[in-house]
Image 1 (cartoon, rainbow, N blue to C red):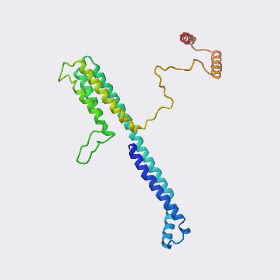
Image 2 (cartoon, one colour):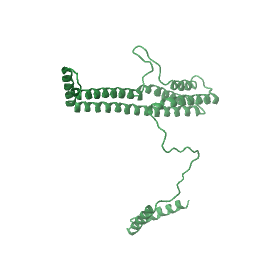
Image 3 (cartoon, rainbow, N blue to C red):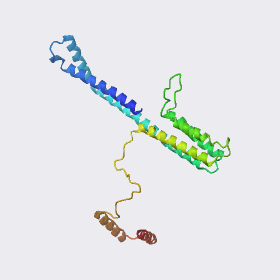
Image 4 (cartoon, helix red, strand yellow):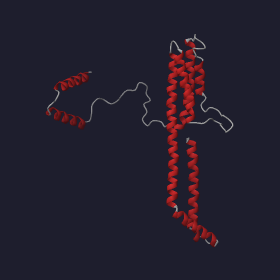
Length: 250
C-alpha cells in the first residue's frame, strides 16, 4: 500500500471510530435526557449493551485490520526498496557499457536485457497510471524508457563505428534520466534527514587515539592473566606481538 492509501484507510477508520464512540456516549446518557421517547431509550440501551458485549471482538478485529494495513505497507516498502536497488544496479551496468572503448554485441545485449528487466519488474510495485480494464495506461516512470532509448543508439549491430562523443552523450542522457527518476521515486519511502550528518567535504575524524582509563586497566589486567597462563605456541605469540609492535610504530 502506498502512503496515500494507508493514510486514506486510517482516516476512514478514525472517522468510523469517532462516530461509534459518539453513539456509545449518547446511548450511555440517553436515560438522563428528558423528552426522549421510551422506544428510543430502549434502542439506545440495547445498542450500548450490544457494543459492550462485543467490545472485545470488535477491538480484536480492529487491531487485526490495522496490523494487516501496516503489513501491506511494509511489504510494499520492501518491494519498492528492492526495485530501487535494481534500478541503481541497472544504471551502473548502462554507464559501464558507455565507458567501454570497444562495445561488443554481447556487452550491448547484456545491458539492454538488464534495462528491459528493470522496466518489467516495475509491475511488481506499481500499475500503470490511468490503467483501466480497456486501456493500458501510461508507464509510471518514463525516465526508465528514456534510458532504454538512449542505450539503443549504441547497438553495434546497427552502427559499428560508434564515436566516443556519442557514448558520452548517451552516458549523460542516462544520468539525467536517473536523476529525474530518483527525485520522485524515493518520495514514497518517507526518508528523513540524518540526525548527525557530516556535511563538510574532506571531513576527518575528530577523536584522538586512546581509550578511557577503565578500558586501559581492563586491558592490562587481561594481559597479565594471559602472561601467567602457559602458551601452547610461543612462536605464534611472538609473531603476533611483532606484528602489533610494527603496526603501532606506523
